[in-house]
Length: 552
Image 1 (cartoon, rainbow, N blue to C red):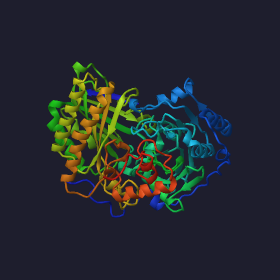
Image 2 (image 1 turned 60 degrees about the vertical axis):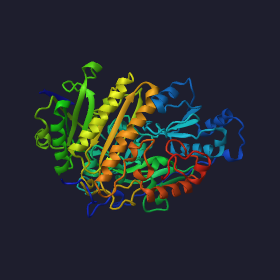
Image 3 (image 1 turned 180 degrees about the horizontal axis):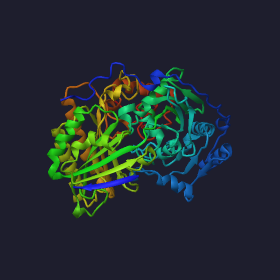
Image 4 (image 1 turned 180 degrees about the vertical axis):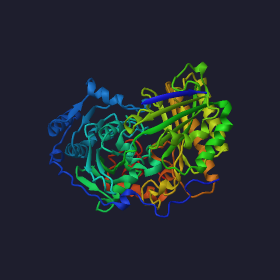
């Protein structure tokens, strides 16, 4: 990485592109899956958890089962990003193959009455809605984490490669594997984020402005059902409904995705990054310039985001003492391919009057580290947002005021806000023509593109948690909802991976899509055994008192 520091109304995507099409709408790809092993759990009457886990260990063979006191147990708990979501289960199981996941599902579907809480499936452990944690048993997929190029077209081909990515992969693993191959993928924007949850919840990636969201680039998934059956689902076979859930609603609980098949795209080479910061005194100037750029940009290789921070705007990479911080505006500007001159042409209008500019050059492999320092482990976390179709100076003024009120409230409670920030992520109009043509084509309806906001909170005292949730729900989320509703534009829906405990199902998936998600869950999980995190209101989930996600 090279570093140089220098001190010193078109509405967005109101309609999908006329010929909009996702990768899976253009490519019918199939792949074989292994046969599920035969087990005897259904005919065995276990009376204790220890007896059941002992039988499971025998059936799994070489797969590890860790308990409290094992170093491996502790390493999995440490991977949970949000402190308030940590759970300490009776056991953590580490399957290494889809067949072993099948054994686990056969085990769980037969012995679940021994545990009060449902088993959890863990990919990267990064999500903030608790789906990967449970006090009973966690199935940690980290050993199903390989990446393969399963189709590799010749260099003169117009087709792109297809990747097979393990359901337990973390972003850094995939970027490392692809480095030097000429291929890249639409993956998470920090190394430690799990690919599975990221893909199942939409997948806003670094190059989304050119290639769309990640799950629109899926071509198939390998899934282990609750009864242990292993299936391959794509939009064209008998499991097309299962594939549909994976396009934005997959972590609502339909099965365990052990492998994702996703189209790759050409490695862009160098990535030019400029981190540009201003003190609060330049807010009006920055808000006007940002709103104008968001409205006028025509280049899908540009990917900026505007951030609000409490830091030193002249020393943006340092977390200085609170007394030395001030409210800061920061533009994270990325350009894929091109050169420094092209970057300057695209973002040069932001240079004047900046308090600091840091230029850096990355590859995709190293770019995953750019944002990682914003999100350290070991804290309580809030990671929620909403979508909107038009950023205006007034929009920024109002969200900045709410952000400052929130941070001041944290300071009053004795918190160090640390990396508490707010972000407006720019999305290219119409997903650059590579999104779905209708809102029903995918479980997350996103035929109309929208910018995506995020409030990322960081705090230590548990007594602050509910206050911060209330502040976000009643101030920031409420304002964002009212702002978008007053625009009188086509409906847009919130990014599932930024869902909050108080997000409304109809604002994430839409009423019709959510009803379909519930119907499909009743088909594949009739007993509501996948019941961690966000749990849809199926008949079984309601009867068990587990449903927490329903239409209002």
